[in-house]
Picture 1 (cartoon, rainbow, N blue to C red):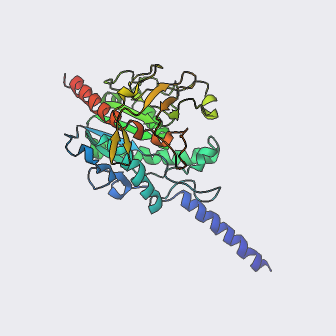
Picture 2: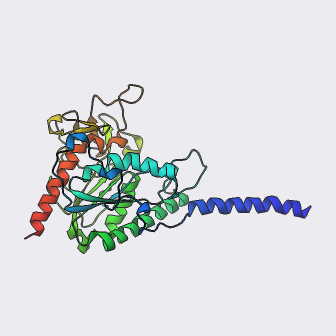
Length: 335
């Protein structure tokens, strides 16, 4: 009888070990190009150029280190808390979405580096602040940190740096900026940090300033996009402890920015539609309120949460701003 009791207990133990092993899968080796979602040393979707920019003059005067958003989803409480770097579904989601539609905004002026990392499962955000969520995000950040150190040592070679991110990526990017740039000598090499799609608290940085004009360097910018009139309860609960830069004006003014300033929303990586978006910073929450009448969901309804479009809505504005800031940075640092 004891023998048969032991077997189920043993199987439970093996099952727990297997789940733990999935959560703690092999640390990434960033010498391997397979552990980079984007790199100038391999062909990937960050190299994509839309047809309307085929004749654009491009250069690589700076490096962008991009931290991609969440692409690891499981239902309920099943599955690992951190992604496996060999998960082809996760990697394909990353490459066909954020790498294609977000990192490409930088390829007119930058070499693009985007590490794969053991990102936290989306469900970790639903239990944010709990020990299991903290552990998942800490593990993810450690990968980002190791990748950044490898990037600095082997690739960057004292070139100008842009830090860019979205959503979960911005959670990690803020931490990276705090550890490596805020008040350190490396801040002098920072063109700008585009930390988008996540709350930036007012006291996030001690020395790194918010960008308040379009050609400012050594600063950070960021926003969270919602339809005009929408204030989610999570944002209201922040009690205004957030910073927002309007990507049409590149300042923190709460005045409405006309669609005349809008250079183009990216449509399916095929066309650009200019003058289709107006914006304003909502005073109490510092959310970016967006008027984009043509933007509908699959049911044909006006969208309220525009989080997934944080880059696409302002794709050409961001692309032109990157060039402007790099020009300003190189002019200043040649003196």
